[in-house]
Image (cartoon, rainbow, N blue to C red; front, top):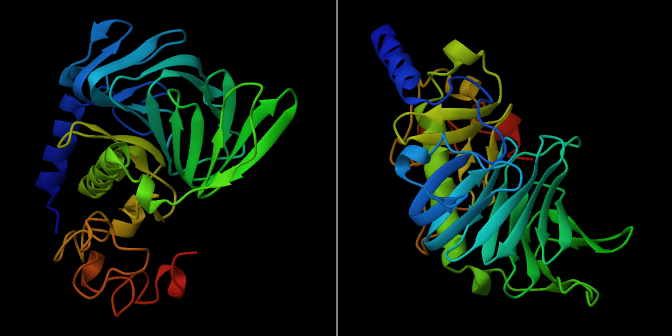
Length: 312
């Protein structure tokens, strides 16, 4: 059980280390992770830039031999590949737009609302992200790929083409054809694997601070700073899984990290034999949260998955 002293110490540490304490302190464009060479408006980014540097309207985030992760709306992460550049067009919460000027970007959407208008512009073509999922855009080849979720591409004036999961679309302006299916497994390259690892770290951060921030933020969903991993993670109002299968849970689920605790033989969605997360609902006895996994004896709400019948 977390003692009162530990809670006080963690809150003190969070207050000292975080750029802003509480829910939703970060906005679209906040830099959340840097690896290798990356620059914001020409200035070299360092680990100290994380949580403090923000891409403003008209500014560019560029990478050389390195990668960077940037926050968009709460629950949406944009990850920029090597030798890539993205420019901020609009940082508004209700109209968030960035222009992928070169290279590749992957966007993990864990939470989205009808009021959100999130657009990634690639070769002058706006693509609006419609549902939680995983999206890759490539300015070099001029294409968008939907690993999961759904998007709408402005293929010509006042006409949007819907691209569903496991489909891709060429984005050469004026020559856009129809969406075509693609094989997900054969397209899980370095950027995909790096994004999956980042998602895993964020899920771990979610568990680390779940018992701390409720005391200060009143269980409100949004971005939250983890002083241990020095970056923002996300709390939603309900449990959910990232597109990679990693579990994210609200503070009320952990009960302040009391009771079952974390790890108990491994994090819920830890990679299986092929190095990929276990599919939804396949964490079994002793491997998941609260000792019983999702499918037997001690999962969510007494062994029956979410509400007794599995997740969604």
